[in-house]
Length: 523
Image (cartoon, rainbow, N blue to C red; front, side):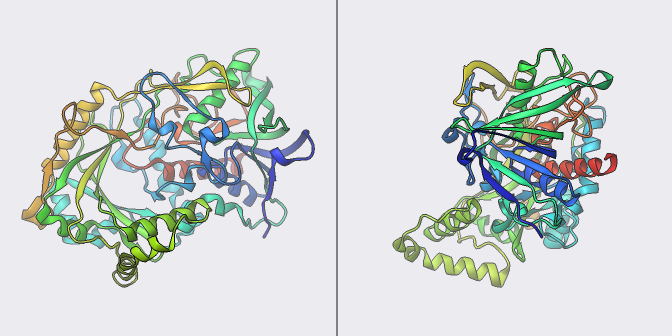
């Protein structure tokens, strides 16, 4: 076993240095960490560059503010974190696959979705083992096993049920994958406070350019030049698009396909409560659908339309239990601090005030293997629906420069009238198929959605900016290689053509595993 070498570029004694590796990975979030571990397991030398510090922080703290054209995109601020672990230092840990439910025969993106679904199906067992889950899992079948007649009543009504899997808090920050590697001679070198700034490309064979080197800088102007055989950008949907736009801007001649829609089609899940559980059936909702524990792992339930129209947006629904208490607040702070690798911010008084609920939480957790939901806790059914792909929703570069001398990014993003109409239609379909009290299920009171009612918000699941495909606008191919550059790949949620029926991180990890296997096969 060998430990990764951790290097703070801002603290390096030398102002300038140069290093070499087989693979250079840019971005130490979920995909970057996962790929680094896979490359090390293959015996490759790896340089991992992370723009943020050793512990994650908001983008504004390190000078990564994003400008907005019009209404701000929440996923660019509250949904992004920089530092070791990236957004996994704050995420919910949901591992949910995109499946056959994401296929829409006849749609322009169906072939790409078929490739994605097949890759997820093939690579999911490997990814789950890497993340520490070694039991057999069937996301659809487990729902039937856990819910029994309730699941079958929902299926009869026209809904499908999945039992989502959630990482334990101690594993959610994927930086834990870097602490030990099993290859004795290939410990990765991890540079943090290292912002990829300047790229040098040279002409390559068959009309494709080739990355020769990348220069990373710290805020105090230390520099690191990295030369590698392969470069993989894993900096998230927004930052990965920004990096590709920078490469295109700085190159002496165009290296990407002129029609590639880099930064365009930025989309997300639009999340909105569509119905409240009636007070008299809140207890029933909690008993049936509160999260269950499987060891340190958590399972929860989500619902999909069992027979969607071919032109229907991809969506899923799930229950939110919105009650809180002092005990919940204490537990949330302790677990969140554990995930973020920081000390919890608590007082003796707050712990004492929440002691009763902490006991109840512990009892339900270890005796009933379920999350404690206090009696009468309000609950609602939440709909998460993918946005319509709109080219004008995009990441672009401005003429302003940040503290590192890079062109700042600007985001244009909006919820369209088509989105709102599809939310209303999807909400009606889900609620019409809900069996209700006749099947022993909680009763739902629909909400008003739209201008005079509940409005949707982003789920911090950005996709589309580095879209996978074979068409003229595609940015990467099915092996995640950037069209037009022989040794440059992108692995981020930005490669997904739309948000689909699942949180995107698990699918991104499966695609990253697929990329690692491709590297193994070709070299």
